[in-house]
Amino acid sequence: MNLAELIGAKLRDFRKNAHLTQKDLALRMGLQLNAGQSFVSRLESGQIKNPNLKTVLNYLDALGADWGKFFSELFLERGALEHRQLSKITPLPLNAELQKKLEYESCLYKTKIRPERKNLVKLDRRILKLKVKDKVIRYLQSLSVCDKLLAHYLKFAEEIVDAYFITNSDFNSIIARYKTKEINRNYLIRIISIVGKLYRAQTRKFVKPLSHHKRRQITEKYIKARAEFLLVEKSVHNLLSDYGLVDNVYYTQYMNFARKAYKIYRKYYLTDRTQLNLKNFELLLTYENKGLKKNILEEILLKVASKNNNL
Image (tube, rainbow, N blue to C red; front, side):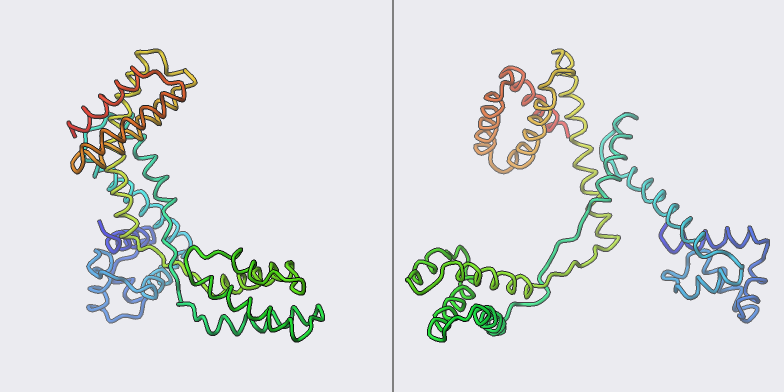
C-alpha cells in the first residue's frame, strides 16, 4: 500500500463513520453528480497518485471532520505500515527475540538519520577582505592606533584572510613576521579572531531535507547489515556464556571486539586477504593488551569467519 492508497483508505473510513455515501459527499463538495462520485471513488481507492492537500481538506470539510484527528491518525498508520514493510525485508531467518530486537533498533536508527550539510555559496575572497578591512579599521581606531601601524595591521589581516583559503596554513609563521616592538601581539590575535568570525559567517550552510524514499533506502541498508550481524552477535554471546563471561566486566569488550572483527571481515574478505589478516592481528593485539584472553578472542574470530561464510 502506497501513500495515496493509505490516504484514500483513511478518507473512506471517515466517510463511513459519518454515514455518508460517495454520492452524498460529492454533492457536499459541490461536484457534479456522476463526475463527482467517480472522483471520490478514485480518491478513496488511491488511483489519484498525488492527492492535492486542498482536495483532502475540502473532503474533510464536507464530512465535518476534524483535520487534526485525520492527519494524526494518518501519521500513526503510515508509521505502522512502514514498520511492517521494513520488517519483511530481513534477508535472514531470525527467531522472535532477534526479530524484535532488529525492529526496535531499525526504528531507533531511522529517527537518527540526518542529512549531510553542504555549502550554499562559494566564498568570495575579495568581499571577505573588504569586510575584514572595515572591521579591523574600526577596531584599531577605537584603540587610537596611528596610521603608520594601521597599514601594517591591515596588511597582516589580508595575509590571514589568504591563509584561511589555504589548507594547513600556519598563523604562527605570519605572526612571527610581524613581531616588532611597535606591533602589539594581542592586537594580532584579535585580528585573527575577527577574520575567523567573518569567514565562518560567510560560509553559510544549509541542510537539504532527506526525502522519505532516501530515508527508507538508508534504513533498509541498515536493517540488512544489522540482521546479518545479529546472528554473529548471538553466536558470540553463546560462546561467552559457555565461558561464564556474560556477567563479567569484560563482556562488553568481547562484544566490541566481535563487532570490529565483523566489520574488518566484511570489508576485506573479498578484496584483500593480506590486509584482513593484518587488521585482525592488530585488533587481537589491541584487545589482548586490554586484559582479554587470547584464546577466547581467537575463538570469536573463528565464529565471525564461520558466520560470514554462511551468509
